[in-house]
Length: 254
Image 1: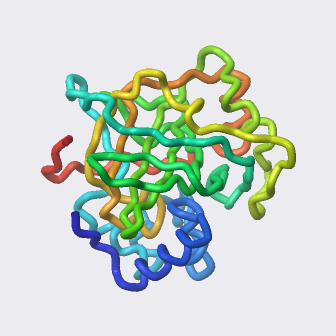
Image 2: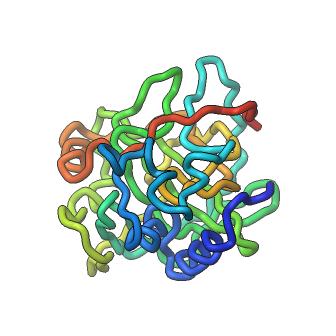
């Protein structure tokens, strides 16, 4: 799949990837020249007008997130997750809670390996199912050796308390700042996934500026539960940090 990013975007993304700052974290670079947000005159509907580097936000034809219609066939659970435990290195980049992941974890899809760089959280969910949001969504961001991005999205719904997410909730910074290592605390992304790993697959983009296309999306069909208290704790830091769904423009699910 051909990436439609401008050369300047590609260079910035490469630098960010090297630092383990993909997607939401990567937005910090152009943010210095054109701050963006989710509402008002710098909200999602105006991202493409804030900076020439954000042109794909307006002009792209394969943008994310999307709505997944009722009756869409879920792909069989054939992603190989090679996740290991990681130290918790968590920060607040001014748009989301984000945790950078230790080297050594990856997914394999159709013989290609993508290294796990980080995960971050949105509330409400960015993807919708038959027009309905989940309470939250977590994105696990990966990159292959040749620079291609793949993101695993998991819906988070109110339900039972989830021990795998508790360290993230407990140490999520309320104010923006660089990621810090929480000494003595580890997490394992494998425990943050649903047991049923069937998924919806499509070609899309970053969901934050610069909205670069050429991203492979794997959206889990089954949500994960967090307690009401856990959801509320995340919402108290960021609520409404989601981009509205984008047109499919003839795309198909794989």
